[in-house]
Image 1 (cartoon, rainbow, N blue to C red):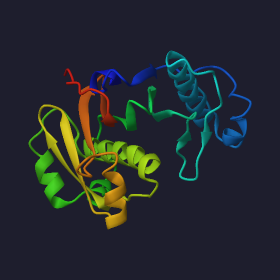
Image 2: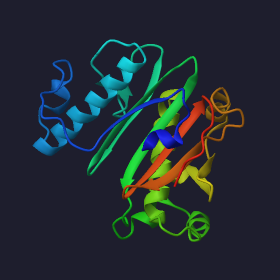
Image 3: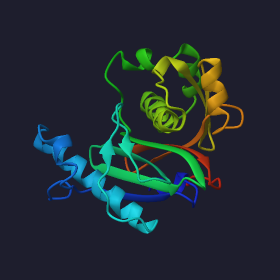
Image 4: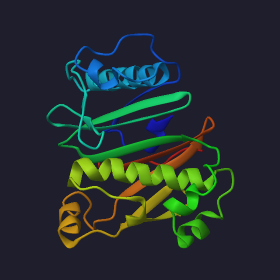
Length: 223
């Protein structure tokens, strides 16, 4: 599904059933103390990632974890992972074609009470009130997750939810206005010309799916 909001330069692999397998030997320590459910979603998502890397012609390497929990990709590759109940996905691309990518999937269900106020502004909530068929709090949460997943590996600094103000359009697009320092904004302009990450969103299969990509060729989602 998620490939519908990704440019063709990005390879996506999804799964809706968990792999019954052991983690890659060089990744086992990352989930050594994890509960079984978390362990299986980790193994399945990493399996998706290796399948996606294989489509780029990369060997089946271990995918480590960085200081903020971000996946560590082979040299020359950018990518992103996501998982939620009943869905796992990995996307990868050659860095010479795509400079940043972030994806997120969430169930199209309301967030817990109080979470929306913590991750959004009144302007964002008013903007989203016009969309039917989507839990707007989940859409906003997911889109910000995608922004942050693309931002951190590309720029190297952390964003919190209050630093991104999002505007959505009914054709499945969104733009992030970021409250960041001057050096961060200058660094981001090497990725996004105006320093504003842009993404796509869609609702399908009971999920809210979002993606932020810098580079590649634009696509239009099908709802």
